[in-house]
Amino acid sequence: MWYISTRGIAPRVNFEGALFSGYAPDGGLFMPEELPQLDRETLCQWSTLSYPDLVKELCALFISSELIPKDDLNDLIDRAFSRFRHKEVVRLSRLKNGLNVLELWHGVTYAFKDLSLSCTAQFLQYFLEKREKHVTVVVGTSGDTGSAAIESVQGAKNVDIIVLLPKGHCTKIQELQMTTVLKENVHVFGVEGNSDELDEPIKTVFADMAFVKKHNLMSLNSINWSRVLVQMAHHFFAYFQCTPSLDTHPLPLVEVVVPTGAAGNLAAGYIAQKIGLPIRLVVAVNRNDIIHRTVQQGDFSLSKAVKSTLASAMDIQVPYNMERVFWLLSGSDSQVTRALMEQFERTQSVNLPKELHSKRWERQDYEQMAVMECDGCCVELCPGNCGPRRGKVTGIPRTVRGRGGG
Image (cartoon, rainbow, N blue to C red; front, side, top):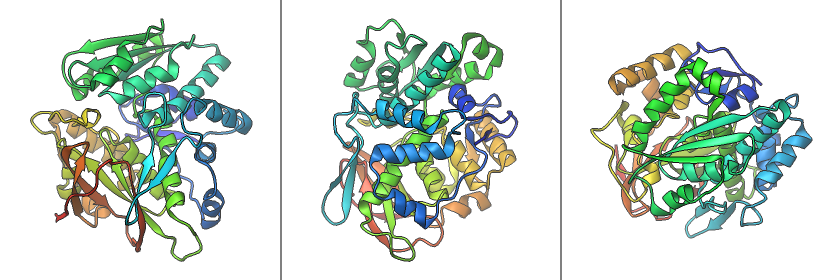
């Protein structure tokens, strides 16, 4: 399996190269050169698997056995989930009227990012020990990424982690999770500005390839492909838990409500769709609604300022994983993706070409939702030929309050 940049200029790399790169040298994000296609038989075989076993099967599709042999890969994933509080790691809680909640909070820091970061850290350790190398991880955070990243690598001899924490923009518990770790390899700095503003110098640093190479720098933000890869398992597990039988034609459709900030979980869900999982994605955002405006109007542009909400980890105006979504929407057209993203970086505003906007978001319904007591909105991303829904699964702790059209 090879990985290429969404902007098409950087040379292709294997999984190890994508894992250690963060941003591609041309400023893009790494994506698989080709996406596998899952048939009904494979979905049926996977439908009875536990969450950890689903992660193993998905990772085996995207990580060459020449890089990590299957037995080693399985051991790494078992080790990654060994400290989760729930024996099943992830659990589906069934509510009324077909609504379900996927419990992704059983990791050490109570953030869903514990799931992908615990695996990613194990992959890192595997290669670092094998190559006898040391890396410095640089992470910018709006809250949950920082604490989960620290937890995943604290105490590791061959990893130092630098976390940039936006002062006054994280929850108190997340700030304490980051600033009370006393391991020698953990370095946390409070910075002025919001999480979007601190992402800019990080991206500039990673664009300096000589500096990155000299200091062995990498990122564990969701620009890292490994994060997105593991998060695909959330969608598969939710689907199989909500679907008692795969004997129907076409396969049942499950609606998945995805709360998102930087759009990593959205990108994971969209890739899951592309490789054969029949889900409808409903994206939940708070008042920082750039994804909502992109879906409804094709308006991918910054607001005047980040709006503070109680869902501070979602207080993000630059959802960088939308670059992966645009690349997929364009049919893996790196030239189109590069032009869009370079214009956005120059002007902070892009109107999606009509053919790109209408190609994906054929239905433009949205639901007004309460997200952690913050007024937010949901936009429904529906692939062509959506059939009747089997049920709904959500990570949102509150119910739908109303419905509008757009």
